[in-house]
Amino acid sequence: MPLFTGDFVSFAPDEARVQTFSNVSYFDSMTYQFIRTGGFGPVSVDYYFVEWDTNTNQATSLIASGSALIPDAFSFNYFLYTDVNSNPGTYNGWEQLISLQVTANPVTTYAMVLVTSDLGASDLALAAISTVDSLPNGQALFAVGVTDYASLASTTGTSYGPGADFGFASLSIQLSPVPEPATAAAGIGALLVAGLVALRLYRRRQEEAVALAPVAAE
Image (cartoon, rainbow, N blue to C red; front, side):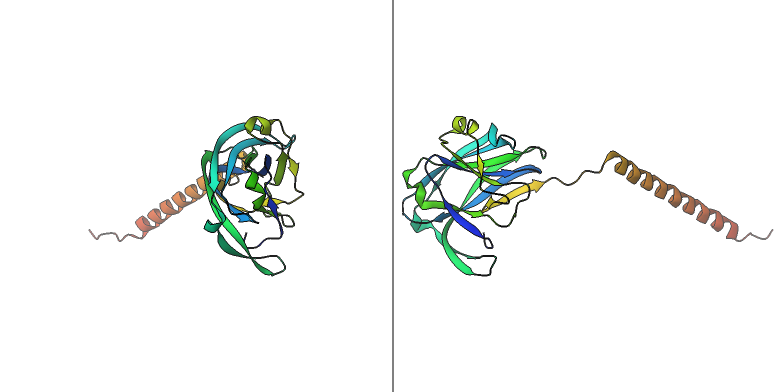
């Protein structure tokens, strides 16, 4: 959020905001920065953490869900940001942490879905980062007519565009590349060769030490 270009996308009742992820092996938590564009009252936001089918752009299974109460505008704070053209600005925001603690499969795509039926939702927004792909293994989408998980699973999401992501912070573990079997075997072989060379050097030094040892006179 401190450096982004894009728009503040307001919530609409029963319209989901979707952020997808892949190549992650563990999700600890996500923190969204909600923005106030108007209004003062609190807004209740439901969240669904799901497996996501990138071919149909639909949720396939529910992993975790819950609800977060975004407080009234008087609890918000002013945050500074600078866009890619170095233009400074401020926005009235609230940081909401969502704890997950989910072990994931790196080859599976997951999504965090935010939805609300609150009539005051139009006064609440997220930043949509639309010109820089800051999260190559994910994208931002929206889905209309979502009131619960059942309606989410039967609704097709629509992308905000190539490289679009919502403004958020996550604590997660990205999968490190695993060596291919041939590469691993080569590494093990190199270790064995290094061990044999060290053993031969040790034996040679022992032999040299014996050869150079003084012989006692009889």
